[in-house]
Image 1: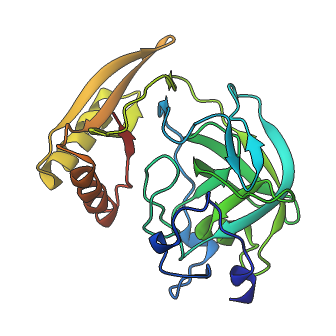
Image 2 (image 1 turned 90 degrees about the horizontal axis):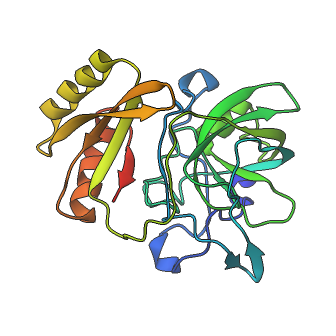
Image 3 (image 1 turned 90 degrees about the vertical axis):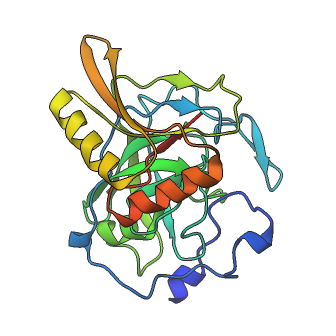
Length: 255
């Protein structure tokens, strides 16, 4: 679509060969707002990967926020789609244009935010896991699916409010320097039975080990479900794709 073609690239420009498409577009398979599910907030750790600060794009210097718990801003949202679908986001996850995700220049990633279209009142919860959009007049880049949910996919941009959600139990591990992932965190539950149920489902699907660990978060006890360890990032990507194909999402890579 013309509006999609006019949207600028979301992430910092990598080698062009990484993206076979020259222009971004909407997918052939269209969806309706009812097809789009909100991202489910969870206590994902904040790692060094994707959070280098300061960083420079197109001669502009950006600094990642140390604390985004009270972040609320209004501005212009754009969206991105097929050009980036199936490629890594800034923190190593795989971009899925049908999931509710987003890119932001300065928020720590991953984090979760409530985005409201100020023109029509529609809202969605997104997982912020990418960098961009690198334009002075744009605040956030949403996935194609999130733009559909908010009702501005055809227009291309919308006036929005972005509010970061405060989630208990998030570990800030930005001091981690490892560039290799060995685990996927698939969720953190207040109920041990829910965690064990997911563990059983995933273990039946995967050959990699699936474990449940207990962690204290303030006054709450959480049960975290993790896949791994795996041999290397290539095996991790294979596991992520299998999880996505089975409807579980890609999980959060951990060192």
